[in-house]
Length: 104
Image (cartoon, rainbow, N blue to C red):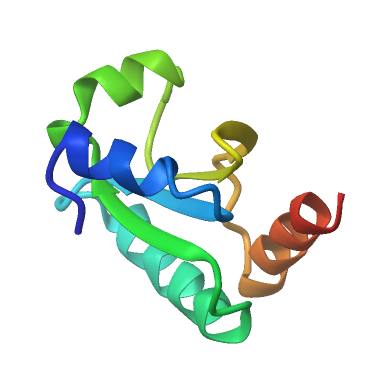
């Protein structure tokens, strides 16, 4: 789990595809979405950076990217936000959303 702005920014600066899962510890929906994301992570390219972030520890990031609720999944590439979604209906839905962004 990422615990601060600096650690998060370090990973985003790596110029790799970076998937950021935003959540809070007491969010029940986040727990289910996290399981979906973990399954997708196991099927995707190992070159990607996968981060699990508690929004309470990154307030500037939340403000900058206008995170409206959790769970939230963001995809960055070359420092640019390519996807922000709050939709976690199924493992295949998350996989398809990521594939669209990665293949673009």
